[in-house]
Every structure is written in C-alpha cells, then in structure tokens.
Image (cartoon, rainbow, N blue to C red):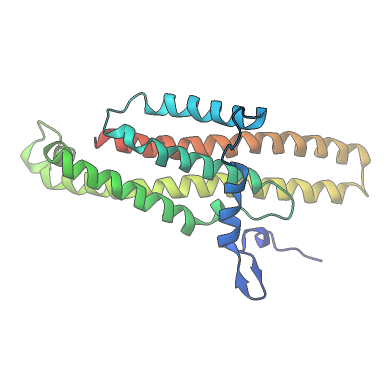
Length: 226
C-alpha cells in the first residue's frame, strides 16, 4: 500500500469538522497556573526557564519595548510546545501550515512597524533611504528597501514552516526505510533505527530552536522600532 508522504500535514477533521482549533488550544494545558504556596519541581523549572529567556530577550529593549515581554514569552511557549507535541506519533503539527505561521507573523510584524511609525516616524522613514545615497539611485533603493520590509513576515513564516516540515519528512522517510529493511538486513535496519533515534533527538532541539528564532526575530523587529 502506497502511503501519501504528505498525509501527516493535512489538517485533521472529526465528523467532517476541522479540529485544528482544539489542537492549537491543547498546548496551554501544559503550562498550568500555580495554585500552591510552594510550587512543585515541574512548575519551578518552567518558571525558571521563562524568567531566564525573558531576561535574555528583554535585555536589549527600552521600557517601551519591555511591555511586549508577556506577548513574546507566550509566543515562544506556544510555538515550542506545539512543535514538540507534533513529534508524537499520530499527531498533527499546526506550525507545518504556512497559513498559520503567516497568521502569527503578519500581525506581530505589522504591530512592530506601526509602533515604529507612531513613535519614531523620522527614524522609520530613514530606513528607506540610507544617508549619502546618490540621487540617481534613490528611487531604486526606496523600492528595494520597501520590498525587503514586506518580505520580513513572509521570511519568518517560511523559515518556521520549512524547518519543521523538513524534519518531519526526514523522520517519516527514515522510519519507512527502517521498516522496509527489517525483512532484508537486520543489521542495516538496526543502524537506520539508531539514526532515526538520533534524528528524533535533533528534532526536539530544532523544535525549541525554531521557536526561539521566531520570537527573537520578532523581538529584533520590535527593537528597531522602539
């Protein structure tokens, strides 16, 4: 039986209704609100990691930019948990959908740009035309800088989609090869299985790194506009 290589990237449905919304809401259950006077180890580790990441990411921002800390921490927790849950068998990863990633990237990028034009109008307009540009090159440079500005959210979404999709496809291909080699050569299948385990560990790291990179780039766009 031939299996569709991209079947795992199709949005799941139940009784003909899409359940992507429920899947997107599920990662929030992994971060419960502490209700005890003394937290357990899991919540303590979560809070320590959040504080460490927040301190590192907010170090470059002024007071106005630091008001985005809750938004950025929620973003990195959501993307990271969604990516990791997508590595579970028979699961669905929403971040493999370009439409969803664009839905995150475009509003956040737009908010940073509007913030820049509102509070730093002259500095924001100055990015379109570097100082000392020869007069004949002014129209071309303005067009190039405008295109580069509008490409930023697309690059954010495509980077996240491509990295997560490539990892899932590679795991799928190597897993299929391992099953096929079981009946041919047990030793080769064992070597392939070890490679599959190492790749899965690497994908866990990639899932967290891509969440951090996405959030960090949004943070840098915010820093340039505040």
